Length: 102
Image 1: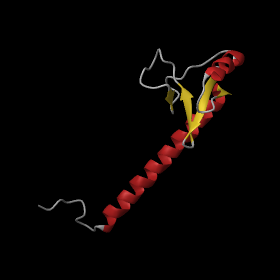
Image 2 (image 1 turned 60 degrees about the vertical axis):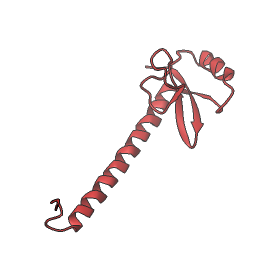
Image 3 (image 1 turned 120 degrees about the horizontal axis):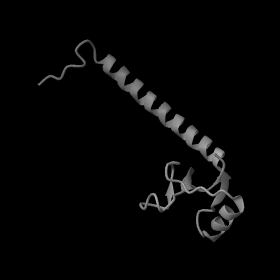
């Protein structure tokens, strides 16, 4: 599936323009679930030129999917690290570490 999306960078994170017919909470999202996709790059660029703030840019949908996938992998890595450190701290408590003493 080809297409183009409008993105912006905010606080070092890439955000995608949301389709307001699908979601009304905000204009930008870090997920591709409700993103607004244009079939024509020129139409997307015209709409991006009307936006004033956040330096919007038009990118292909495939690149946006790679960005989203990389972000998801990074979140999973952080989750694994947190679970590992939690398991190690439980192990250091000793044999009765899982018990709660009243």
